[in-house]
Length: 480
Image (spheres, helix red, strand yellow):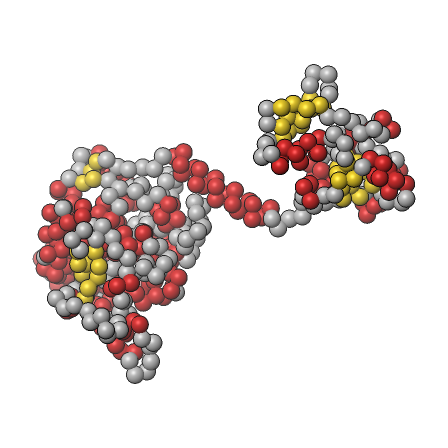
């Protein structure tokens, strides 16, 4: 099950060491009492070669994450799967998965809600059964992931490759000095977290293997089935599901709230991680106890936390204000629209058009150019005359004239599509008091300019707090 992008190998391999200020670093257990030699480069700083590749591998993690599941798969060949064992394995899978999603992730990593002592014990035990590290160690790593997403300090950055973010960061050694430090003062003050961390090896052995074996053995005599299926293989599936949030949730899906970093939303990831697949939302609003905000989105962890609050075991459930969530969604939609808009031809921007006097406009039209003036903008309609739906004669009659009234209802009230097409024919702007000139001046003064009409029908440009009557071009009477 997943953390919203954090999964961790068994803590038998690595642990978090706290600094005096409450921040953490990562030190292999076998070296926890040793100081790193500053003169000797860490193995990760050396290139992988045929002669030293085995030194780059974290063999302990590799054994527990890959070797043990392989032994379980081999054992499954000789151990039959009983229906009762299958049902229990699935139920225990969900229970231990909630230990990660509702416990390690949303409670301890992000403090998205508060839990009373019985629920904290329940979730800490479940998390131990998932065999993904202690809550203290797991949460420290996950906070680093959120603080340094997609950077070199991100423990499982997808920028280093999909396979690396899924498994590589655990089976290959990491330089502890390169992992981002995080504050875990609050975790050090939680007695349940501290106890589980200090007694993690005992907890993981009992909840991960011994307990499911006892249930199946004492319950219906399936000792080997409980060990193989409810124990080893269940752990394998939970770990792989969690790892998918490190990898799949940063690679597959949409980014409805922000696309600056890699997290994405996808229902497939949600299905395999008890609802942790709406990862783009989670990275934008990590303190929200929900991962899915729509009623139809799959997020059983959200429902579990809500149920616990109804019976009084969970409280202070954090939800981000819907106004802020919708603003983020709208901004991302606008960003996509702007990107799409930039690929289309909207004509030469008004501020880049040359300013032409009325007399020069008329003279060029008489010299053979098919120019018409509409709303103070000169358009070259020469290539469109034969395609004009109203006929060649009608558009030809407007050449060299102000055709604003004709275009905007005097003869025909043109559609939005016609306005868009007309914008691609711009070649200049008329000098002399037209609304475009005033609009351009307003833009230079960082004002908003809009065209309005007074009660007499006089066209007026509103620029900032000032109203300016629009002087019609001298030859506008001819167009009328």
